[in-house]
Amino acid sequence: MIFPDHCKEVAVRECDDKTSAPTAGEHIYFSSRYVLLFWQGKVEVYELELQGNSLIRTISKANRIAGFAETLVYRRKIDIFNRSKLIAVATRLCKPPIKTVVFQGFDLHWTFVCDPDLTSVTEIEVFDVSPPDPPYLITLIKKLNSAGIFGDLSVRFTPVIQDLRRARAATIYPCSASGIGSNCLNNRDIQVGEHAVLLGCDISKQVLEARVHGLEFEHVNICPTKTIRPSKPFIVKCCKSARVGPTELLGQKGYVVHWGANPYEVASAVRDLANAIR
Image (cartoon, rainbow, N blue to C red; front, side, top):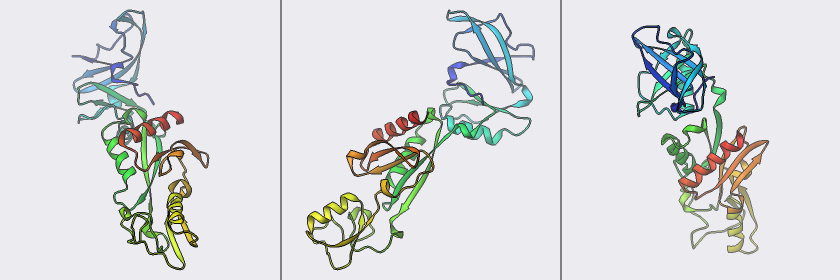
């Protein structure tokens, strides 16, 4: 796959005939690594080798990597900094003889993807619990991704939701915010009877033990860090600050964020994980 690191590497040339291809000896702006040659609504793509050290440099070699019949221009403007999306779109559109898709950004700059390869996009599993609905961590990462925060990372996210309503019947719940039970640890008049079953994490267990000394109860641990089985790099949340940070489970790199992590902290966690994977 050929995909420029940045649109600043892509030069654009409009021409009236097919004889205007870049050639050795021509001068060009120093950051240009590729040239898009537009002719009658069609495009050819060239890769350049430059020589010199000045602002304007000399082309030493121009190699055509996609001809007019092999290139498709995407007709709608798109966020050209969202690399995973561009790779996905190019993969869908590249059917023989097309092997390259050219994109224009909202700022009118250009880029392209040649021979797109979806395996270059890293999949990250996002583990969360429900209720509440929608799950906070999954929803937040979706919003950040839509805003382009992770556009340069070439990542995509797969939500993995643990539905607490499917857990075995419980008599005590950690918090009324979950909405799945009324007998919760944050209620003053919590009801504790025989054969009590707590549906909660490690902290929930400690809270119940502190509130009712000597109580015998069954603990169904729902802490995501204890229940998940990642098959890919992953993000998960936990209420213990000591667990926050990079982690590894079942041979997969991951990152634990606090259950109350703000958007900046979650974005930083995703970027740290992506860099660790690379």
